[in-house]
Amino acid sequence: MRTVTIAIILVLVLAGAAFAADAAAGKTVYLAKCKGCHGADGTPNATIAKMKGVTMKALGSKEVQAKSNADLKKDSTAGVGKMLPVKLTDAEADNVVAFVRTLK
Image 1: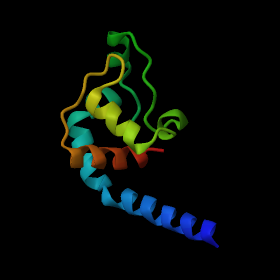
Image 2: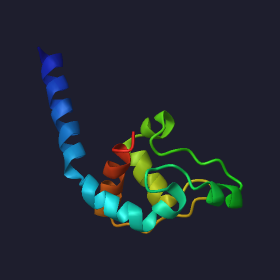
Image 3: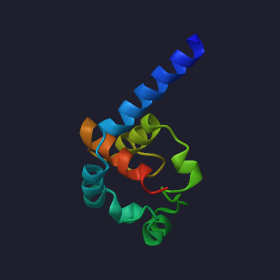
């Protein structure tokens, strides 16, 4: 019984965190700050990738979608590899992650 209770609490906590972010607001920020490199639909801009000499993963890929929300947020705000950090408020970053989740 205790295991079931813990599982239910965990599901509720995770669901609450998922619904706290606004994917629609995240799309607006994404289109303004991320689309140039990552494409409107999360498909990498081949010209940018070639220019930087990198292989960019589609944001809807299993590999990217397997990352935790915290990791996606960190990647966005701190940068990854040759990707420069993006200046986002905490709420904007949460919203962008919520939008990226819709790309799977």
